[in-house]
Image 1 (tube, rainbow, N blue to C red):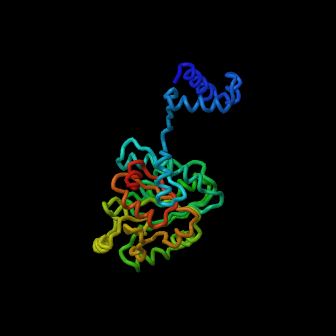
Image 2: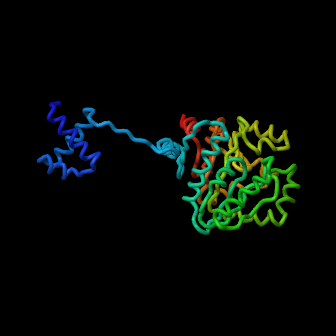
Length: 307
């Protein structure tokens, strides 16, 4: 490429890309048509005269997010960049992004259903200025720290200026008779009835293989847990279990205080917040079930899902 042509190309590219001059303006300066200016700019790229560097802001990897959304047919996906993949770091990274996704999804007057647990606490603590809505607890409590879990619907309700509707119960009970009695308690009966009118649900996904689930850890009936594992269950949302091919199991429904598959299916959007090491198989099973419409996860987990 002749030196004069190189100089013209470099000048046209600099005026267009750095100075933000229009091609018409550059054409006037150089005494040529705007079509020739466009060719000069293309030549500057082709001949290495332009070095483009784009600095993506930290937070969400939009390329991975788009790939996850497309592969699993989701309404939205947000893949969060993480500095480490230990569970605590991942939960801390996912919380603020999930809270923003929730803000974008909610409308004034909606009924929001929230899971309880370690991941959801990080979401709740990041929630600010939510649209005005009431909040209902989706499940009883499986965690060893019930006071912390019970606070999650209250925190969400304060962020939205609405009322919190709680479930005062463990997630699972020893047998169906005790579970039925717990459901009939007035405070639980009122909250469970509200689950029929869910607009948005934000949930976590627990893994059963490997076991990374408060439900798995606290399920008292070891024989029941063994039988469920033999069916090929990989994970759960609330008390709804997922097999590897996305089929759903409600084997725990008789002893659980939790939102049902039918109630979640009626919601406008179900946002899943899940990531960290060992969670990919459970997340994939949940996505294949078509129960989840939006996913917030971390980069390493997203890459494993795509593989």
